[in-house]
Amino acid sequence: MKNIPKFVLIIILSTQLFSSEFITIGTGSVTGIYYTTGGSICRLVNKYKDSTIRCSIQSTEGSLYNLNSVNNKDLDFAIVQSDILYQASHNKNNFKNSSYSKVKSIMAIYPELLTLVTKKDANINTIMDIKDKRINLGSSGSGNETTALTLFNEIGLTKNDLKEASSYNASEMSDALKNNKIDGYFYMVGHPTSTIKDSSSSVNIKIIPIENEITNKLIEKYPYFTKGNIPGGIYKGQVEDIPTFGVKAVLVVNEKVNEKIVYALVKAILENFDEFKKLHPAYSNITKESLLEGLSTPLHEGAKKYYEEIGLIK
Image (tube, rainbow, N blue to C red; front, side, top):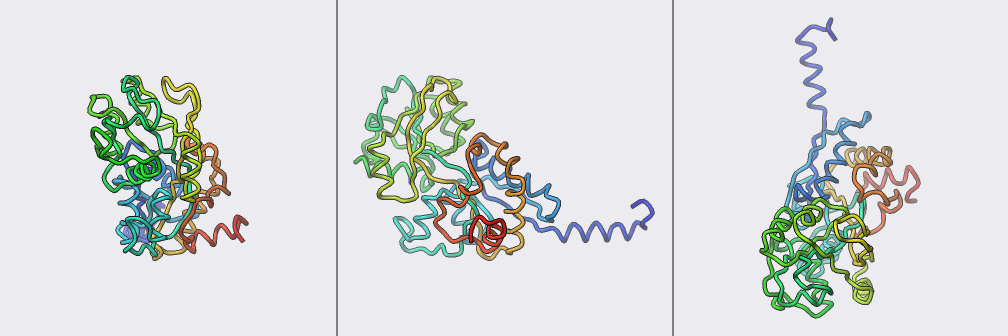
């Protein structure tokens, strides 16, 4: 471009800048996998040769904040737990008098498992042993807290059965455990995660199993739940696989976002799917087909168009 007059070059560069589409993905705590996942998606989108989209991420309070922000179009895209999405779209529980019809699905990315991390000397060996203990449930109204309380309801516990029910967010709870402010915390997350690794580096931890008898009843009642195992060997002191249950981390979008933008985002991920799967261990077992499992709201037309083109849906 060295022979192009300077004023022409400025016009060309300005045109390229303003022809770009800028989008933001709402994620979660900077220490969590939502944040990493949003960054992974943006990395693929921003380098994709056939797209003018410029993608950035925003750290947020998590699923409930993200759901409301997309519904109100304060965010274009965000990541939300599939159980929260299901309840909102079906007007269940805390969403009975609300409408979330503007929130559409793009893909269900990876499984998140409810994980109860405790101090080894807290004498907690089963889920019922948390009675009279100091347990962190997560930020008030968060997907983390919602899922923990759904479990409580199934096994006959309430917050009042705890010595203390705290509400530290994901970036705070590991320090709370290390500083002896709590005996354990619930965390809905993909594995492995740096938060639990950080806990295990300073405190002897124990991850408590949630047995099949409990998870079978939960899955029968709530179709968005699924069984899962936290793999042994990924956290210090945890040798065996640990049974539990979980949901999916779903990428959602406001229905008003341009179809071409959503199409381009999905295409950038799917055409670089092997690279995407290497960006975090939590993605290692996902498939293109599994991206469509666990969706409880309709697909955005842009996503639907691409999935139809490659034969994932008919």
